[in-house]
Image 1: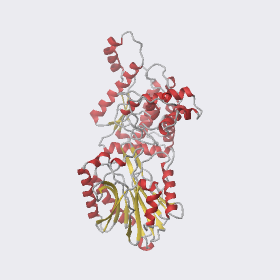
Image 2 (image 1 turned 90 degrees about the horizontal axis):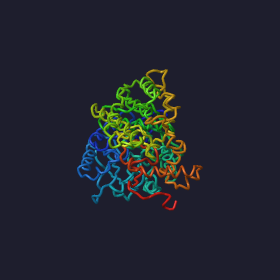
Image 3 (image 1 turned 90 degrees about the vertical axis):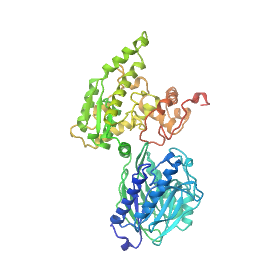
Image 4 (image 1 turned 180 degrees about the vertical axis):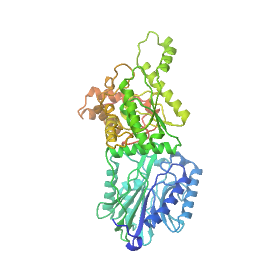
Length: 559
């Protein structure tokens, strides 16, 4: 649509400021807000600039909200924003104290260089990754403000998932409603949002402007993808996914969409998952001040995918790959690892673990005498690799990325203080079957230093997976096919399905019971795993809080 000035259309021009914040860095967040307001005024001629939920504090601030000095800092930065935005009106999320002194999740309206109104979030989510009832007291009243003759309502994130807050805001006189969001990404989330907002537009009769946070914050990734939904049906504008952006729309006093800025197509499927993972890696490294990353590159599918993700997130110059062969490492694995580093332009070092492994075996031999070799010797190899990688991380200030996937973490197919040792786990919430899909997707993108080489070698994708911790080892020796394993994990972990329900999906009962037992028995391992990017409805970590010491077993609890 042609970009017209506000004077030409005669409406209220509203900018959607999709911002990437850093939790706790109120000063930097506020400075970025001031910068974006200036850009919105200059570049798109906006009168009102709308920011996401809890922009000043970052989201989620968690127990920082229990500190009075932190909340005071948020309030000071809010005042600084008001002093520096000139004649722009700003709608912004921040923690604030209500009239009774209780903490609220607020949307604050600034106009004329001062705070003119505050709205407190009314629906406080307390499920999944959300824990807002721990910190906030809910609001009770709608808010509508008039800006240049347009009645603008405001709600915050979860409010829009309930009919009451939106409809009451419309009844209070709003012709357009702004929704301030910190809505984290998971697969299919975009469609869910659009469907909810379309329903609210229909029931309220108001156009809705949906502004979402963007960027990685520990386990969470916010995908942005802000949009405008009009009452004649459909969306007029999409902002890009996983990137800061400013968009704009023009509304009349009656809430009609008069004009809007460029719209962006949203990626779906493997493309959006891949982008979520690279965003999570990039922001975790940047926001925690690391100089780059290091990872062990085995020549297997998991570490190969993590290497590609790290390069795309950070640049090859900021990634160090380390091959750590043992007596069980195949020449194929070493060759494929080197080929991938050549393809991506990554520095690759090789450190044999044989001397360390032999030293461990010798030191333990008096106690191990007469006992058959088993998982103890296998895990010594993984722990030797963990020691090497942590030493490199410490010496060079690089974040150690672990390479385990969700399928393995679920059933304990990982070694504590070995391949689980590290600071961030990029594919922690990625099932093994999706690991393969993402590797194939990455190879469609090209972008290798040597065009004749794939980003992930084809042989890595097609060969049978193996931990290579003993002779002729295969994952299938101890695990069911990954297609079946992932279906069981998704049903039991993400949907809380019973054993009977999972078996009814066409899966072998003995296999289901064995896998469920493995999932429950390995909570202690997962509790010690590093954080990683959440891409599913229910990831291990913030979403799923099972006790470590627990007597619950489905076979013994009526299942």
